[in-house]
Length: 312
Image (cartoon, rainbow, N blue to C red):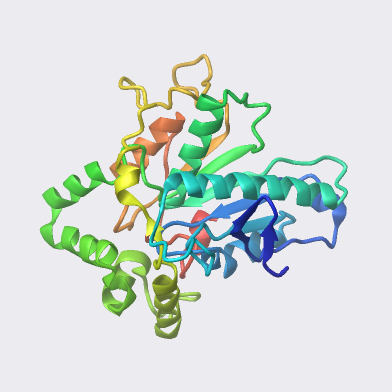
């Protein structure tokens, strides 16, 4: 595990600790680097307990970043809101850093990273692809990534439609989401925090213990000092670049067959016991990438708790 580094091209970005398995160069040189992107209330720490050591042990170079305003990264003096464009900038900068890091390790072939995002982190990927493939007209061959994986990610329409579905299903559950996230009550309310993110058997191996939960709530408090600017985000969602007929991203290239997915390899994973992103939202995102959603037995935080292996 290497210490945090600074990015010379973006002094606001903190490149966080990452794991690499360098014991066998023949193993690591042929495997794509994995770049993990967190969602709201989280930072790079959420990947460090299980996912990064697990995939590093399989020979994958693993990286994670804390998006601007989280994980003690500097968002600016007195800054309380961060725009999605700034997160995309951080992501772009980090991808460039990974490319240089892999080159510095003198790999025979520099392999493009796979982006793996959770929850709101999936929006950063969508906007990153929009910016590069649609606005900058970058080709897939030129794109500095090789694939995208979205886990319990916010769909292209944002939270609006999901919010209405939750209201129709249960006023109580809708209130819990609003109070827990918008009002940040998950930071102090242990029961609500567990219900929204980690609902599981407390006797199961690797479960989030009461002690773990208190530590996580401390991280939540730190990582929400500067939050995503929802008013700015509302202007960019629902995505304007979604085909009204089939829900696909209009700027992605798809196979000739009607059932073919995006030429950019994509995987969309949802959690069966997700309290925050419902199955309809997961399926909407899957249509965006032209793939079938994979549902796993897990709560919202698929990378933590006793069921972390199900999505890994």
